[in-house]
Amino acid sequence: MESTFSSPAEAALQREAGVPGLLTPLPDLDRVYELERVAGFVRDLGCERVALQFPDQLLGDAVAVAARLEETTGSKMFILGDTAYGSCCVDVLGAEQAGAQALVHFGPACLSPPARPLPVTFVLGHRSVALELCVKAFEAQNPDPEAPVVLLSEPACAHALEALAALLRPRYLDLLVSSPAFPLPVGSLSPEPKPLERFGRRFPLAPGRCLEEYGAFYVGGSEASPDLDLDPDLSRLLLGWAPGRPFSSCCPDTGKTQDEGARAGRLRARRQYLVERARDARVVGLLAGTLGVAQHREALAYLRNLTQAAGKRSYVLALGRPTPAKLANFPEMDVFVLLACPLGALSPQLSGSFFRPILAPCELEASCNPAWPPPGLAPYLTHYADLLPGSPFHVPLPPPESELWEIPDVSLITGELRPPPAWKSSNDPGSLAVTPRPQLELAESSPAASFLSSRSWQGLEPRLGETSVTEAVSGRRGIAIAYEDEGNS
Image 1 (tube, rainbow, N blue to C red):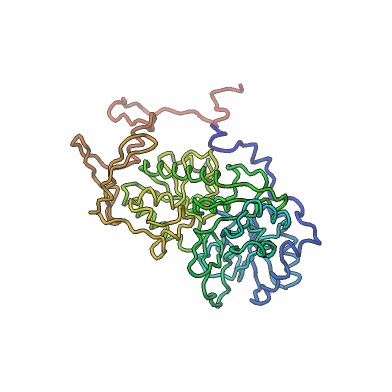
Image 2 (cartoon, helix red, strand yellow):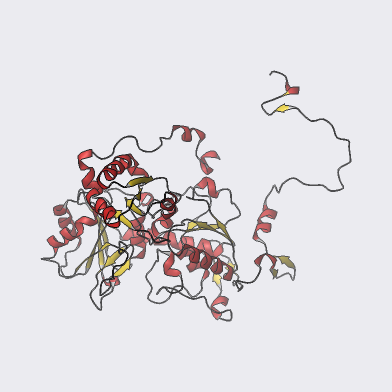
């Protein structure tokens, strides 16, 4: 039971705190962390206090980087580590607690807009890319020189995409290069025409072209990366890319390629299974997976109204990073929905150790909104902001009199017919709702009470009027390890 719901107690005592020593040699520190550019960013803003955010795997270099920047800029540096949620999001709350006037984010980033305005610059890293090997791999995967292809990469390889495109363009005529969608500096104007932003990247599409026309060539990952260890960034690309277009990946070190079509199919099948689990669920746990990404409060309110409209009960849980031990404390929940950035929402779902499945907001929308998906929509949306009103992908709930709520639906998991969800406005007190049953009985609609009645042990029984009255007697004295009446044994 301990290995299923929590880690062994010895693991906490044997775990090393942080990464000991430097990870990067001192002569390479300026190049790897782009310290010259970061120092210019701090000087231009005139900041006296700057927060440096590092993921866990780069904390070994944090002290050396902070000391180097303090020496060159004269500003006070604060190291942010062990963020409450995902390290890919900008920790605006941590920067505010340190009184920082700007933030430098090191390592992989989801590039989600922060909830509060704060000057931020990103250092994604510089992973070496064997360009000649990648060119040969691209030519082997794309023999047609006129086929439209987009060059994608993991964040640390984004610096090499333009150089790779320069080697390919003499032969390939319809080549598109993506770039990280860094936030624009405060006060700057958006470029015209504005490029398409999707998957945390910008795509400079020509007028009249759409992204669904292009295949994809992804530079990143390793030679052997099973589905369970798939990077969340690659997962959202495989889920959101047009199913009919080719998608291949290339290891930047060896040039070994892999067709990702089969893996994308398995990911979509897994997501469809989670949608079916959400349709069968009566109680949904909404996990607050971020406090620093913009529109998280609006998204939480939207998901609560969505579950209420579908006749489900929802509970909001703020637990920090979700772990199997935390979520096992809520067995009443049928499914959990993690409200987080696109990378955070996909990260825990590849693990099979959770007591209940964890869904992304898009899957809850697909299970509760009978009008979903609209015609021509991409197969999967990875950011909760795409579901909110004002987004081009937003799909309003049908009115209560719509026939969409009455369409019979059969569960693909249990094989039973699902009843049509009863419409409930946001002002209805769900805990006092009375639901008619087929047997013409009336009962309070409370999933928590139903769950309690199904348990074999429901707590101590009061037995009112069944226990005889006796005088109070002295109880046992001492502590649990050795009571006084137990002797020295």
